[in-house]
Image (cartoon, rainbow, N blue to C red):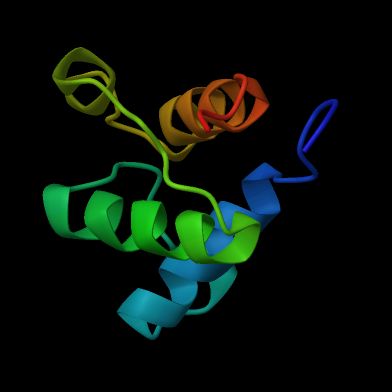
Length: 81
């Protein structure tokens, strides 16, 4: 994939709404470990690419915006192989 991924904040909120069975406008901004694991899984499926995230990157994800920044950075990094 070249350029910036089309992943946006609304995409992540929609994914979290699916997990929590809440309307998107009721999804909290804070992300717990279960929500983070869900988001990583869905983003990997959507882009057919493994996100190579370090422990520091994962530990720094506390909000939807944090996740968006880390996922975009990972998706725009050169793919291995």
